[in-house]
Length: 315
Ligand code: NAI
Image (tube, rainbow, N blue to C red; front, side, top):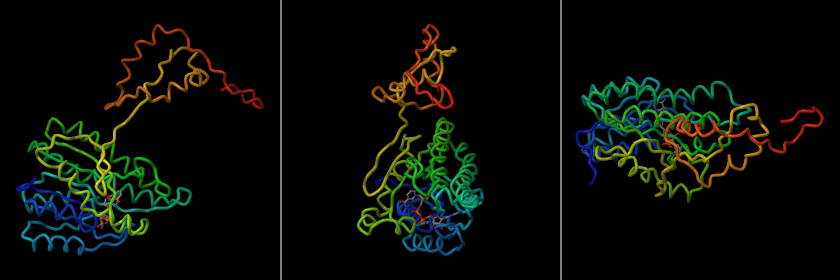
């Protein structure tokens, strides 16, 4: 049985939904838990200490150790301070707090955009920024960021939310690279779970299959001291757990003389989007070495291009 005795776990947005389920689990496995929750509505309005208090009481009643924190994640340093003040440490950070401001892009207001960026991106940044020096000093840290399928694939009415959620994927990938030599591991999950966030858009049958505790085993595995996993992107829910990775077609290399025209792109379009011999890059610019081979290439053949007859433009 994986246990977390002596570890301090900070969970943002732990007053309900997934965060509450994580908090109860980690406490039941011996961890000290910081239950952060602003007590906001799904669209980020209002605040109340009740959500976090109820979870802390539940943990204590079961013999566990927990403290509440009511700050918004945009003040993430205060959440980490609560952990340090109460338990003298922080080992695991689960950036889970989240809200929605769903609206078609046409009708989206700046406020809808800004608030989503603030809670999801700035919030995860601020907690992580405060925990990072502690992690580095103790040469141990585990971070889970919470993305969404909406971020990975796009989702109607969620331009703000999908942007922030995919941003958390990039954030995690960089934290994983910078943290690895300090034994700081970062992974990102795109969960699917029944919560107040999803209860209005899913049927009862689906919601029954999507209980939040079905996300817990992966989060626990990825945050345990024994795990060697970092830089992973996972979809998880209802008993389904899968890893995602970036895939790139083997692509086409062009000679970069005057023949590198839109028509030369068109000529090799099939190659550009052919995933038969796909590559799985894990860092930027790893293709630059391939460009050596382009030096001795002949000029690029031009495709038979569509002509915009009216404007006499060849694309
Ligand atoms: P939830 O609404 O039940 O829980 C989110 C919690 O975050 C709430 O208790 C809320 O009070 C708290 N919160 C909101 N703003 C906060 C702030 N500024 N500071 C501190 N706490 C704040 O939602 P759920 O479903 O448990 O979502 C948890 C995370 O999982 C979110 O990041 C969400 O975007 C993500 N997610 C959930 C999915 C699902 O199927 N439930 C799907 C994809 C992603």
